[in-house]
Amino acid sequence: MLSSSVVSLYFSVLLSFTAAIIDLTQSLIRDLSHVTIWSLITAREVFLAMSLGLRFLSYWLYVSEPPIGEQRHPSFRIGLSNFLSLDRKNELHCGNWARWGIAGCYARFTLLATILAIAALQIIWRVSQRYHNYGPVYAADVTLEVVVSVLLLLKLSLNTVPSSSVPRTYTFKECSFSALALVLNIGISIGGLVQCECLNHDGITWLMHSSSRIHGVYRWPPSSRS
Image (cartoon, rainbow, N blue to C red):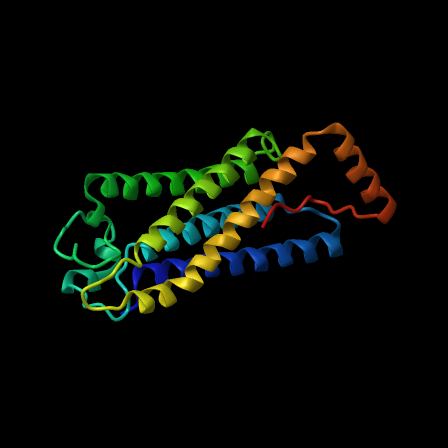
């Protein structure tokens, strides 16, 4: 049976693919009929926002899972039906938040709430014309992305503590690709913060606007951050 994190990542990719198809459709319609279908653009932005939220959810689920080689309690194999469970029966595996006591449980659900906030901010920033700019909403969103990515990376590193059934080196190798993905995610989010800060300076904004005019880089409707 597929784990919850894999299922969440699958739906994230599916939503991204759907958003790409919608974007291609509205681009063809605009080029052929010179009419902008704003409902398609809104749907594209909502799907992209939900895709990002599901990607963070897949990370959150992954850091809660035991290594592949570690024995799993039967309740863990239920998958999506118990991913919010407070059951402590499988607390011995190295991915369980219960290993860190009350602090781990609070951190677990605080991160989940923050991930939901990221998805909500993404929808607001992408859909609302009032906030569709590099302003406070965008800055809050990417800041939360950096914080959540760093905390998930920390949790992933804590998962490499010695396990009774799996060597630490094996667990570290298993987590390495996910850790790299989180590092890249942190870099992208920090880049978004830098871009937001730069665009808030009138001089840099004027230079970028002038460069766009020189090279004829105008796209309508304006595309959002992917």
